[in-house]
Amino acid sequence: MFKFLKDKLKKAVSSISKKAEEEAEVVEEPAEEPKAEKKTEPKKEKKPAKAEKAKPKKEPKPARKEEKRKEAEKKPEAKPEKPEKEEKKEELPEKKKKAEKVPEPAEPEEKKELAEAEKEQETKEEKKAHAEPEKKEAEKETPAAERAEQSEEPQKKGFFGKLKDRFSHKEAEPEEKEEEKEEEDKKEKPAPEKAKAPEEKKKEAEKKAEPAEEKKAEVKEEPEEEEKEKEETEETPEAEEPEKKGFFSRIRDAVSTKVLTEKQFEEMFFELEIALLENNVAMEVVDKIKQDMKDNLVDKRIERGKFEEKIALTLHDSIESLFDIERIDIDKAVKEKNEPYKIVFVGVNGSGKTTTIAKTARLMQQKGLKPVIAAADTFRAAAIQQLEEHGKNLSVKVIKHDYGSDPAAVAFDAIKYAKSKELDIVLIDTAGRQHSNVNLMDEMKKIIRVADPDLKIFVGESITGNDCIEQARNFNEAVGIDGIVLTKADVDEKGGAAVSVSYVTGKPIIFIGTGQDYEDLKEFDKSIIMENIGLA
Ligand SMILES: Nc1nc2c(ncn2[C@@H]2O[C@H](COP(=O)(O)OP(=O)(O)OP(=O)(O)O)[C@@H](O)[C@H]2O)c(=O)[nH]1
Ligand SMILES: [Mg+2]
Image 1 (tube, rainbow, N blue to C red):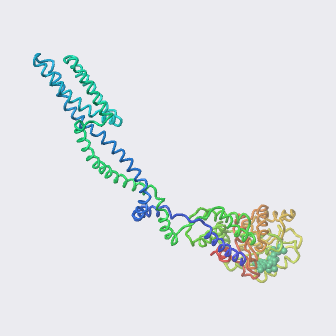
Image 2 (cartoon, rainbow, N blue to C red):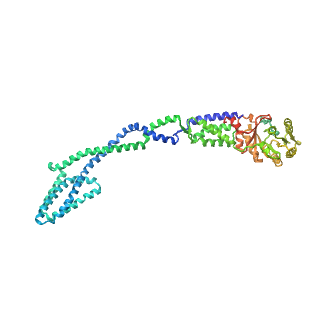
Image 3 (cartoon, rainbow, N blue to C red):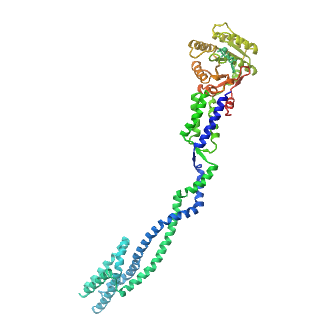
């Protein structure tokens, strides 16, 4: 039973699984796991990574150092300004005090004080003159606020200038000019050694300070750069990627997941699709299986080596769900009904209606129920005799009329007999017919109208595959069937109808005919089909 389908499904699942294993794209470990690894891994691998990184980083370092050196070289030029400022600030109050005091004293002392003030002024101006070139350079770099402080100087000079204007003689002017000339000479020519002396001391001090500052700058640079390095190592893990990949790939070899794309799935499913169609599985069912598998396989993380298991499980669940239709428990329904329980069997010619009726009578008897059979096929020759033979064998009463008589009347008489004899169940046989035969279909409708059956069972041959499914659909549309008996399943190697008919019609399979003996009728259980197609 269903051997071809079983073999084809097995081959297809195996083949698809192999392809899936080969073609599915490897993906990273589940989102939670790598986080933990990422946190720990970089720390462990940082040391060798740093060692590697140190080499390429040596190149940018000199560039930075050069820049910083230049900056450091510039800074010391501006820095000495500060002590000068402090000196000036210290001097300023004295100047102000003296300047304020100057005009007040009496005239003889006034001149002495003025002379002292002038000397002081000259020494300060000399100092300032020395500082001037540095100052100008410093101004280039000093912030605006500092320059604003410095800009106060001319005002102060202006104050002394005013004093000079007020108290000094015209002789002072050439001195100033000489000083200005000296200042200009200092700028253009190297200043005399004596004049340079204080400057040299400063410069020497600066030079001494320079290396110290450079060292400081370098010392400062390193922690900054180390921090940057750390940041860079954290921010740019690309450099560590090759090592990480090597490490992770080893883990992935042990436990890794893969993802199947929709395109890959479509190509792989084609083999299964052909296998299903070749074995009479209905197109609707193929589409349903395909969708279920797509939902479960495409873009889903599947462990390497687990594709076959996953595909087989998905196929199993998909096919099993085809039978998720409310079952009919006939003997239970019969027992619950106070009147005779009536069943009409319909179907195409030779599908096994008469044989199934005999088998059902035996099954009901085995369940302690008393059946009666209505020979409502008055059309086909020998149909009545066929039933009488079964009746004898089963010790079951067969209600019959003459050939050509109204089949509905036979059904009516059988129900009446069952009521009178308090029988439990009336089994009504009908002539085989094609759904396209209007007259015969109308006759069948009349039987149903008169008998008013509790169940209308479509009897179809499992071996006819898609034809069986199509017939079931047509009979359902004509009279509204309640359930299905699949006959000759024992000689059906494909099983497509068994897999498809319930899903297509939405009606449950009640019995499966598995041979020509009375015992060869199985109450439907989906496990029968699943076992026989190798998906139990
Ligand atoms: N192998 C096998 N043969 C069956 C089964 N059911 C019925 N048959 C055989 O199928 C043939 C036709 O069976 P019938 O019961 O006469 O079919 P029918 O639907 O009554 O035919 P009509 O009355 O002409 O429409 C018989 O030879 C049966 O023995 C079955 O489940 N398995
Ligand atoms: Mg028959």
